[in-house]
Length: 235
Image (cartoon, rainbow, N blue to C red; front, side):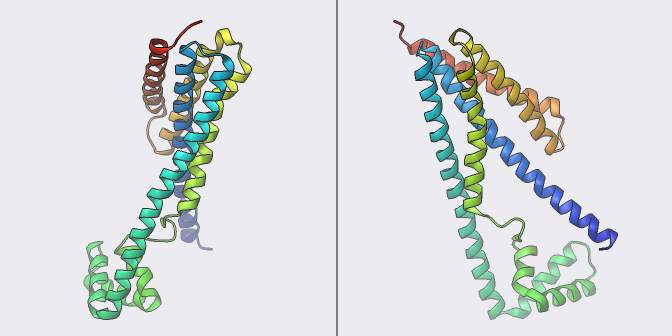
């Protein structure tokens, strides 16, 4: 393998890893925020530790299923759109191959190739895999960006569940008297770390990413706790 090929290989895998990392971090972030807010709201209503734990487990299950369902529907819609676009492109290649070749050459010319070289590249790629060339360069569809609904749904549900498990562990391990502050502190610390990780993966400043996530998450938890305190009953 040449140095140039090795560089492309490493870059491709690094970018793919960043995409999955950011998706996993966002899923875990949602799990922590929603579950911590839920259990803090229930705790502020003076519920028993058992009731708080049950509410948290129910929130984890409901949230994970909701994330999986939403992700599956969203990505499946993208799959349907990709299939329709590829079917249309297949018909156009059969009906007007010369026009499609000219269109592909124009794409390469717009990217910086001279007209002769653009035509040569378009012709070579068309002979090799006409639909693949148009899918990749005209429609923006390739093997690395193709939507995978089941994979996306499972990944979303798992990352959400991992994040949601944190407040539940705090409930199990912390005395009732210290449960609320322990949930808030542990959740915000983990959210700050996840925010910094997501920012770093995206090339942004980790500190700013952490502060942004912690700030909005703290507001969410405070609002839920306020609702629980306002409508809870004692005794």
